[in-house]
Amino acid sequence: MGTVFGSYVLQVGGIDLDHAVTIAETLERGVVVVVGGERLADNSEETIAAAGAIRAIGRALDDPASHALAARHGDAIMTPFAGTAPARWEAFLAAQAARPPSAARYERPAPERMVLEVDAGTSPAVLFVSEAYHPWWRARVDGASAEVLRAQMAFMAVRVPPGAHRVELDLRPPALVTAADRVTQLSWVVLSLAALAAAARRLLSRA
Image (cartoon, rainbow, N blue to C red):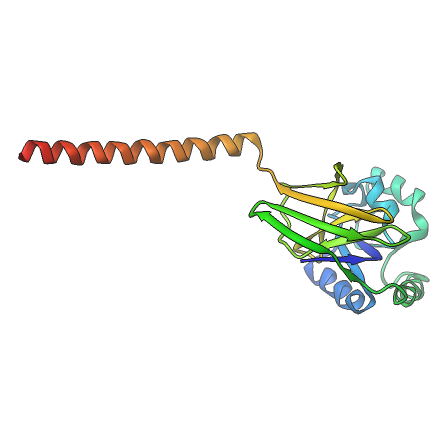
């Protein structure tokens, strides 16, 4: 369920086919692909800075906020088929083989909770979790809040610093959704009790 990778590619813009191509190119090299939305500015500065490479497709850098981020992290940005980007991309992939992925220890105390023990080694890494991504998942690394990334199109990933760490993932619906669920559960209880009361009255009337 959990695998530690040494690096990730942040892919911004494009369609599912573009992501699938990048995943196919990187999987054998031990690199995870993080889905970065339509604009570079859709991502946190930490996610951008920690990426081994950033593939920007289409208009991913056109808005002012994304353009400013690109100016600060230009060394990692590669626009497919533009200028020296293809050669830089191949060089990036070739450099990743030296750090193969490793397994994380995984526990599932409850359906909506996961605990993983991770050893990132001597440098930062990314923990890939083969559980469907949902924005309600919340992560903590050694008790501190951490960002949950959408990885490999449909799964999750969490950045981890060097060394051994405990990563906790909890599914936390918004308060409004939780309240609605409780109202629904209470409604079913009330309906069940009403049905039992009606059945009891029918039986008593026949006695």
